[in-house]
Amino acid sequence: MKGRITAAVPSETGPDMSRFRTGAHLVSRAGRAPLDHQSGKRAGRAKAKKGNRYLGAITGETAVAAGRTQTREGARHRRLARRRGAAKACVATGNTQLKVCHKLLSNPGMRYTDLGPDCYERQRDVRRQVARHIGKLGALGFEVTLCRIPGPDPDGTGPAQAA
Image (tube, rainbow, N blue to C red; front, side):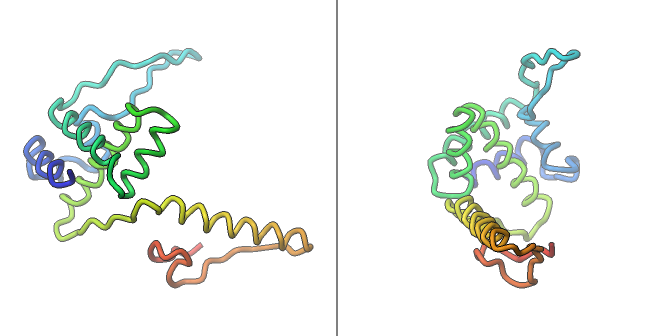
């Protein structure tokens, strides 16, 4: 479905992505940005935002299809659907797809690399290991200060960031 959304975005918005400063601007153009309606302490439900209905429909279709795939987007869609419901998961997944599409079309030559359906579990496992080791050292009376060593991540998900 990635090909269909990549083909639909330029046909609905034009090939020049410089009109949209960020992916969030493109999401807003599609009418998929979340809205807040608040007056004082009372928070109410906002009506759906008007936008490009064709682009919104395409992102809805591709989001549902992404939920059935073994990719990072599919894993995210399924996690959100369990917590928030299928409709909100479709909007969130569609928004992510539009932001990725904007990034790819704004930077010619950039390639999309999927992190895989287990990327969330790998992140969680690393965080759990670190927390467990810090807790054990703290119980032994040590004060722990963490500093990431430059080099590959221990979980292999990408380049390490300096802490």
